Image (cartoon, rainbow, N blue to C red; front, side):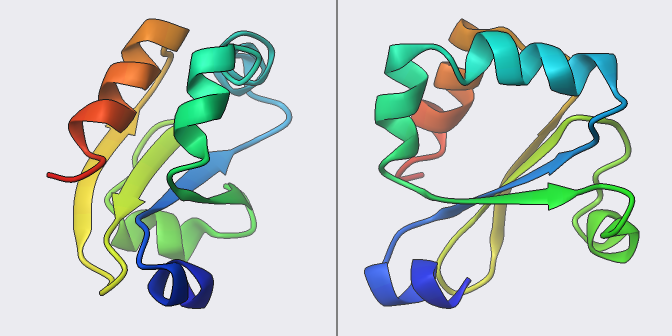
Amino acid sequence: MEEAAGLRRRAVLMFVSPWDVNCRAVDQDVFADEDVCNLMREFVAIRLDAHLNQALMQSCRVDALPGFVIIRPDGQIVATKTGALDASQFRMFLLTNLYH
């Protein structure tokens, strides 16, 4: 979050688990998408193991995996999205919350 504040960019917290089918699908399909990769450069990406960060997950109100939280540089949560997503849904999530 310090990096996000220093760069004045929003952060994307990504709560994932290597054992979750939806998390593996997001890794294979969503993060392989060139447009998603380009959009992610506008954010500071923070990938977190859901099992090791359960308290943070709860404080961000993430109740399913994968869980994505966009946070402003001042620490305010802007948006949360959970569950299975395809590349177009994730792109829309990022675009909608890039400056909002």
